[in-house]
Image 1 (spheres, helix red, strand yellow):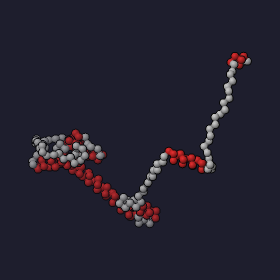
Image 2: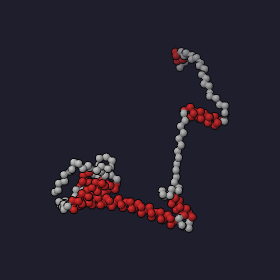
Image 3: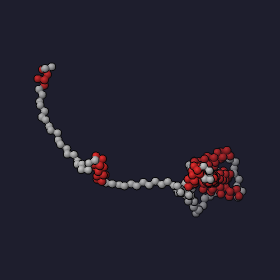
Image 4: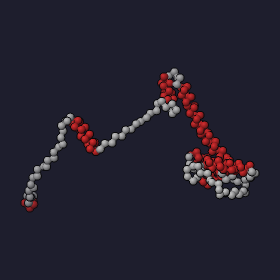
Length: 199
């Protein structure tokens, strides 16, 4: 076992937001440390290789999903020099594969569209040219939507509504109605006993 005492005057690198270093940077630091230890003659104690491999798979799957891996799993993956080196190499290769595959696929689609733009069928030729024009680098047929919001006061809205109603009714000189009270007729008193006699 090797003891590494922390030096008080050496700051911990914290380039990313927050107190934690990104997963890829931690793996890179662990890999550099492991390579240095191996160069100095350090030999790992016997460890469970299956457990390390399982931890590395879980870390890579978490990174692929965009989720930070569980701290204990990540520590297990970086616990040995071989684990630290393999974790870093797999994460680096994974990043390169994603970037290269995206670039390769983009080139493939663009090349196929260029070939189809020479097609004898005019419909296929026009569609291929349209799709080529929509590529972000070209940007010929980008669709833009503009939304204009006009705010009006309540009084303006009421006046506009009244004007539209007048036009719809066909009367330009419409006036507001005058409310008239209904005439009140006096209520006659009913004699209950005389009303019940006839029944």
